[in-house]
Image (tube, rainbow, N blue to C red; front, side):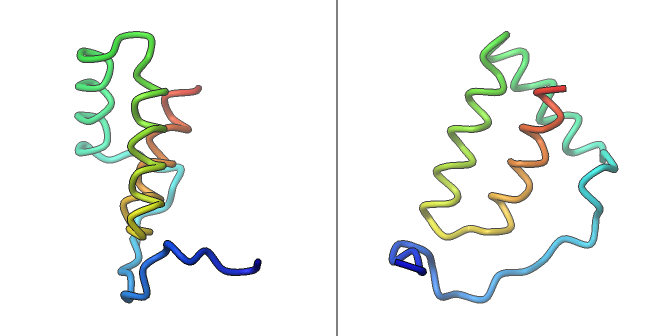
Length: 73
């Protein structure tokens, strides 16, 4: 199968911010994830990313992937 039947057909907005550049909102989310989940923060963000993917929210999925990558570094 070449297409995911669960994905939304809605048009998705794209982010103009490059993935390598951090922003204050992302920093706040990372700080809160560390405060709530400690060493499991990356796992929690990955789980949220999967949820966004299955809901067809591509913009939110990409943002969570960016956060996950920062947490893994």
